Image 1 (cartoon, rainbow, N blue to C red):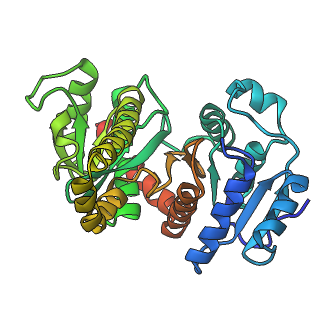
Image 2: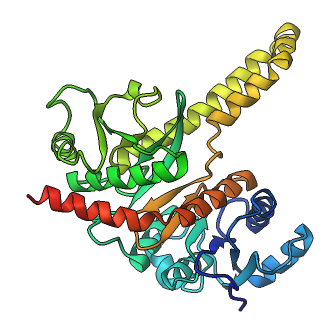
Amino acid sequence: MVTNPGASGCIAVDAMGGDLGPAEVIAAVKLALHQYPALNPITLVGDEAVLKPLLLHTGLHRGERLSVFHATEVITMDDKPLNALKRKKDSSMVRAIELVKNHEAGVVVSCGNTGALMAGGTLRLRTMEGVARPALAAICPREGGHFVLIDAGANPDAKPEHLVHNAILGSHYCRVMLGIKEPRVGLMNIGTEEGKGSALITETNELLRRLGPIINYAGPIEGFHVFAEHVDVVVCDGFVGNIMLKSWESLVNFFSNMLREELQSNPMRATGALLSKGAFNALKERINPERYGGAPLLGLNGNILKAHGSSTRHAIKSAIHAANEIIKADMNLRIVADIARANEALAR
């Protein structure tokens, strides 16, 4: 077993998770180390017999910036989460989470089984004091920039206090990743009128309005507000958020393919597309789901960042960079303080 030579600020990367295999993960690590010279050290967690030849082939060498932590098992996408966590205790995912639990790493990045990663993180790291349920935060494009969507799928059966905590978690993540000092928070609803929506939304709205000094609450928002320059954090339960996230990602692919077909339909359009290549590339970069690479599971006593199972090396590289930003910001200490303030205010 080779342990990480760096401090607890290292990034533990689950090298065995993901649809494209460890070769794609290692290619992503190479890109990240090359593109970000100030990146924290990386620990690849996985089967050393598999990783060693891939590292040699890629031209990566172990040292101060890169090490390997040996794990013999792999949790697959077909494994049932709780069974896998019990049976595969020497899996790359479990070992990576344990590195964070033992303060040998600052964050886990994994493309593996979502259910197992969320269950493993929750069971082994536990939620922060005062936080009832963790939440997934995703960054999506909007007019004039990007916004944070929370919860993107971790807790589909939420209570009002969970959504209040989501607002605080999402605000802090927005400050770290998007650099917005006072993020505007909107509560996803079917209308903006007072009293409209479900009992969950009505009660959450009332609670959020009581937290003025803690969050910058803009009130309920509707679907057509989401991609306008209206709010910076969109709060919802995991059921709604997961549908929103996957719908947006599928629409990106749909419109990209449709635009390509239309531009290639005749020579004149093809010439126009060539002349507009710069604009199209800029648009592609703005709406690219791989730009931020993954969604952190916020609210735990430790950092976990979930990337798509089908993530390419570029998406994984972006996830590693996002993980590094989370470590640098020391975000969790600030979250704990605001959660305590919010819970105290709501208990009055």
